Image (cartoon, rainbow, N blue to C red; front, side, top):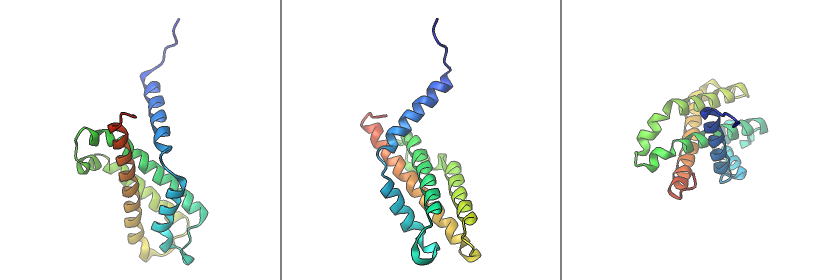
Length: 144
């Protein structure tokens, strides 16, 4: 007899395989450098604590994979703005989660909260766009 597998399991396996391929193109050095460039101004001596840097990298990877998952729509001709509007809720969730992470780990200045939230949103948007472009390129090259 054959083994019965569900479509959900197969779909999830395929997603994981695709994400692994995408992450091979992303360098840890680039992630660290961008996190440092973006958020160092919120900490004394322009240096990010290691735990904060790790959180930034985690959120950047999530945003990158989110953008890549929506890249199929861009490949088929949908404008970036419309695709971005489709994923706006998820992207906003990531930006809010990153902001909450920063609030939890020591950004004690209330006056910087608005600037920090905008910076988090721009950071997530940057990595979403990187993932979108990388995914679109992979679709064009038939590497999906």
